[in-house]
Length: 546
Image (cartoon, rainbow, N blue to C red; front, side):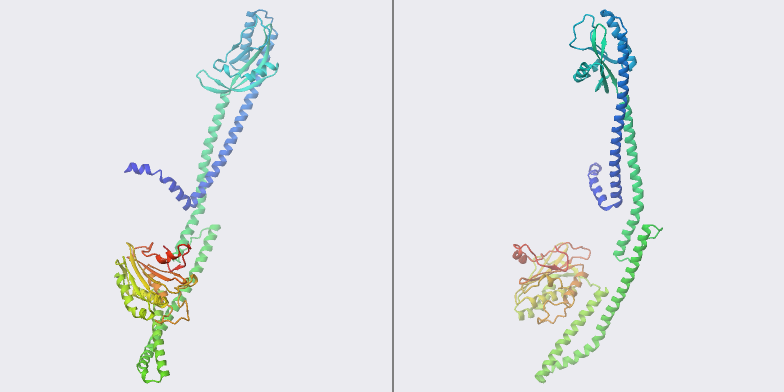
């Protein structure tokens, strides 16, 4: 196992680098600074190395040409002052000239070659050379130039071979000399550039070490400087996150008089203003919630009296004239609606005040759906709608508040009956390991996307002129969404004009589960099949999409 860990560790480096690059401003800044500085140092180093190498070569070349010219002049002077006439004397003279050339030019590599094309001579000595393994470095082009131009010097860059088979750069300088009696000869002197090469190598190594040290120094300085800047920014980011999460008392420490301190003071001033405004809004909201709650409670006493009086009149309506009897019926209906409205207002005020407490218990949502269907079956029959329950896998219990979920189902099924145009209403229940979902599907008029966007708004009705059978208050869906949210669930809707609507309630099996998907599809399968060719799915709302 340790070996596997060791082998897999290098594979994590690219991922760690990418993660650091995305998450760390300091890492990105230092990396970019080091990369650009390293590139600049590399360019400068290469330029300096090339310039120094050229200078060294030109300096050595000038020195070599000067030495070669002196050596050639000394040898020619020696030949001109000689009175040698036979082969032995010429050979000795040529040996003396080579010794003088080596001493004057400081080079042991000397070659004397007779210029071809001359008349044969019995006293002309044979070609001689001390080049050894480097004899082949004298190029034909150089020889042609030397042979064609008497009195001029020509040079060529070559690679010389040492005694130990090592190679070193060098220069071969060629010129002509005239030997008495023997004729014209080509004189070649080779000079090693090993010292210049060693000097250049030393300079390059020095530049490399200095460049590496400079890059490391720049990295360290950048890290320190960026840290001074990034640390306050990191503190500001962490403070803003805490502020966004609701901790309004958090502030950025203020130090100094620089731009970071100015940023901290500005941020703290903004936080103070934001905290003050939020506190004012919270106080105003609390007053408003208290007002709604107090008014609702205060209205209950007169409402109870009106309800009792209205019930008496309603029970006696048969004994009244027709107009009075109808008035008693209207009074009874509106008092019931008023009482329902007060209950909904009280429930909404509890949600607004954050005082809702769940009474959760393991509950089978199929049984809740059956109870809601049974309670609304008579209403469905009057509308001509057929209520159907489809529960292929919805028998998994969930920790929910059954009273609130029953209220949500009653509201959704009642709305489906109201807007179903006498068509079937299908209630589906399904579950998986993490969630239980209930969908209510009708095939009525449906809603446009603009209407879907407002379906959960308080007191909003898609068609205000439409007569309602169950006397809704306009708060049912808003309360249903709050009931779903307090369970950490979703209440979503799909609707399309002419194809009906589908509301889907998705609840986690336990409060510890984080919802990621729903067991039931939205849009429903029948709507997806109908709209598949168009490639368009009408509006959804109330929670995340699958």
